[in-house]
Length: 307
Image (spheres, helix red, strand yellow):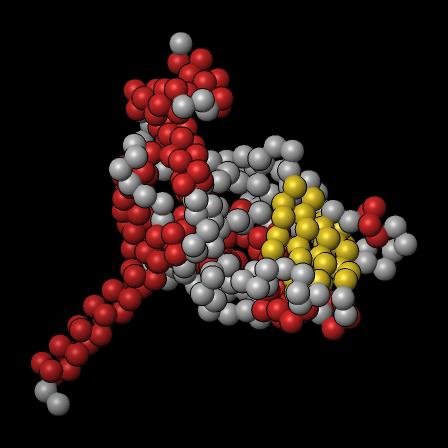
């Protein structure tokens, strides 16, 4: 084999490797953005636990499913740096717990819904309590998916995460799941953050685990610019929600309409403080006024700071 041919093979291999890496970073960034979207079609804020999690596992044939359930909960809380306390066997378990995991009969939930998580919060920043329900026959494949939701990550991204409706894995966390949890519960993240405030924190955690950090940073900056443009179109009524939200089949016209108003407010905040977007007071006022005119109280209150 000639040296020239060998050199060409090396060059092609290097280029392909770089392309694959760039593609993985792009897909990872898309996944981090999609996790900020509720399946109804509305972008969400960061909500998270601020205290120890006291879990009660109960229901039908609970002993057959508790080990898998607890393994999933220990995995997510370990990545988040939270303390998990099992109060299932306490006589006061119902009063002590702030996370209830119920194994329900196989006919309890809808046929197309093997499991579900419900977060309870008085304001959209801090989780006060949560409930997970899993059908007995599906608990084995739901545990990690619902454990992630219970930590406050509400989206169903299309990428390599246990949160996907098209799962890559059901018996353990994937690298992107760990990225999300570490970022979500890092000191840089706070409850109530908008998607544009949260995205840089999530993206930085992805960059940190990338083998080529310079290329990952370039991909991050391109993604920020592209997403900003897409969301301005969406907020203006000409764009759309992420494709994966539509693929879930659960987005609603009302959810998308509400999402457009919320996105106007989120864009206003982004331009006001320079989160994901460059700081620009004029653009901040523009988007806040659009949100305020649609009845967004947060935007109405924030506009006062420009007067």
